[in-house]
Amino acid sequence: MIRQITPQILYIGTDDCKTSLFENQYPIPDGMAYNSYLLKDEKTAILDTSDAATAEDWKDNLKTALKGAVPDYLVVHHLEPDHSALVAWALEEFPGITLVASAKAIAMLPQFFEGIDLAGRTLAVKEGDVLELGRMSLRFYGAPMVHWPEVMVSYEQGSGTLFSADAFGKFGALGKCGFNDSEDDDWACEARRYYFNICGKYGGPVQTLLKKLSGLEIKRICSLHGPVLENPAEFVRLYDIWSSYGVESEGVFVAYASIHGGTAEAAGKFAEILKAKGCPKVVLTNLAECDQAEAVEDAFRYGKLVVAASSYDAGLFPPAFSFIHHLQDKAWQKRRVGLIENGSWAPTAGRVMREMFSSMKEVSIAEPLVTIKSRMKSSDLPALEALADAVLA
Image (cartoon, rainbow, N blue to C red):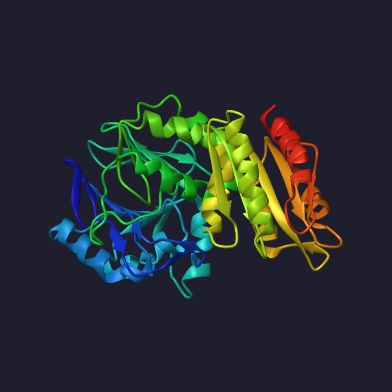
């Protein structure tokens, strides 16, 4: 798909309609976009390439957009293979092209392309360096650990365009697969799931990058995934909340993992109690059936979390363990959590969950820990009520 963004900036990215799991773990029912851009001025620059899965589409887009011109530069903002799979091909196809990237990226390139010859063909750029193209120019800003160490972003001042690497990306294809690429309310949903599962651990580096860019007049953001974002103030606002581990939406996320239905019943009753007490939003999710990435997204979105889980093999039922482990990996923090455990003879889930959450930064555990023995009974209701009061306090 080729699209004109400005008179001198073309979108030449591709849609992946066949891959079912991004990074072999995140479901992408709406496909995935691998974005690439072409800047045509006195000098011509390709900005990133594509994934191997869409290699031929990208080559076709590039050649069509070039209209016979020979590119001068290949800018690599991010070396992850879904954006750099065609680097070696581009170097071979255009012998006079110069590869522009951070020093770290240039050093890492041979890890991905055995035998690649970069001698005399690279330009290492650092913070504040400018690549002049004619009327256009790209100023580079380091973005290490957003979400790889070699990442850089660039800003084209004349058009106010930020080329943001993976930042501000989202899951979903843009056009070829038949999905809508408009900037509607759905951006935040898949952008949130993408951010917290891809970049969530690196809130500090994202905050550093946002501060670097705060003085720029950014009119649009061109990410490596998802639509071009025009008038991006709202998207920047959400990224500031997400990367500072703030609360986006007031409410309680109730996540449960049940073996024979007893824990599910208790979680459902607890959700009803929260609603009766005036909680503005209650989200109830079955961890055994849901996309874990969506559960991680909701845990970050809301300020309060309650996990109800069965005991299992003297520990914790695996779907709940996996969920909490994902939160640990993604640096989940600054939240209040409530715990409900179930066990028929020796409840252990609460102990394991308490230990896991206690290892996280600024996570407070609401009391009491509610213990259900096999099935919820009327005698359990006072404890559930007390936990709801503590969670909502």
